[in-house]
Length: 151
Image (cartoon, rainbow, N blue to C red):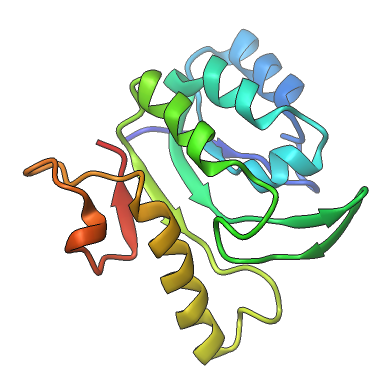
């Protein structure tokens, strides 16, 4: 079991600088990688994925759509501003082999019928990047799981 800290806009871990300070003081503490929160804090999501893959215990799959500095929607993964292809590529190259969980977010997606649609739309987008650990065939051809494995 690994100890992990999750970034939160109202918590004590509010960006890359806070994570790096924790790592310098405490040592190996893992993080829950939430690219939406990281991006909202003004940090470079791709740079974080590239530099700190070995410290990531879990990846939260969500997306955000912004206009300027204003968040205007919380769409399914792949329909927002985040670049999931390059981000997952950096995680693969860094050796990440943990879970990737789809997290319905926002009041629109919290309704039962919409939550189901959001999960399916997100899963459909992410499946193109994920592999089944047992036979390494694309999950997009056979999976109905809500969780994907990176490797």
